[in-house]
Length: 314
Image (tube, rainbow, N blue to C red; front, side, top):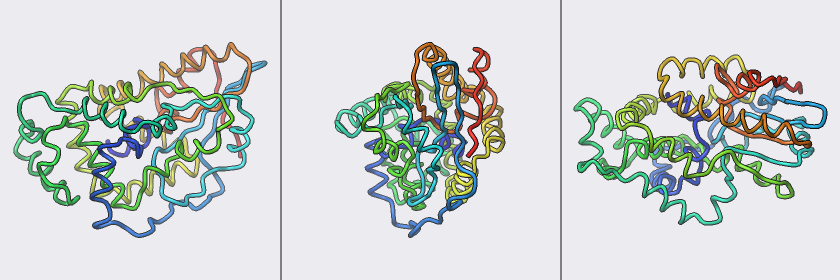
């Protein structure tokens, strides 16, 4: 579960701009952190996968991203850079550059959505076994056990994930979208979703589904560094088959969550791309890599609309 969500679930979920959670993560990172996280796959012969959809006057590139990366990872291939440079428009899940313009506004939005309104505390919602595991995880991350009692489970998931990543030497500010922001100043920019929508995907889940997500996340925290290294290695090597296996496993393990975080969003994006193909020009789309692998991927849904996404060779 944790691997699938990190890979692609939501840009805001794992970005440094999930402000309240990131602040707590910064406060508690480094106590058991790792100096200089090992770089998985230093500039391999492959490269993150890039696809292209074309007709007589339109080209749309599809680039799968990872929303948080180890510092110093050499992932930007010349072919990807050339595709980005040639594009008239850049499209991402959310406009990450806008997040930095008014951080207080987004912090207030997140905190407002995350408030628990059940009349008790977050830990009151857990059974005895899950509560014990949760409190142990909080202690292991140097967070007071009661720190998140007033919040819904999805906010605890975000917070624990971010703290664990930072303690493993992983900085969300190194995510692909954050890096691409510095390369597109002269381009028209669009986004598939707003910050409110992305937070709403989590906030709209039933409490029981949120608790399951939190419990599954806690179970994977101890393997964070190893898991992340494997995941980034697959991404930087451009392994769509390995990616498809990860996403198909996610679909089978929790089809309801997968439908909300992946299938429905992929369908919306495919509709947008289909409509955009009627206009001339070149577009570079950067979304979480998990949306471009497995059943009901963006490419699958585009194929249903008559568009073939071809893999760009490096």
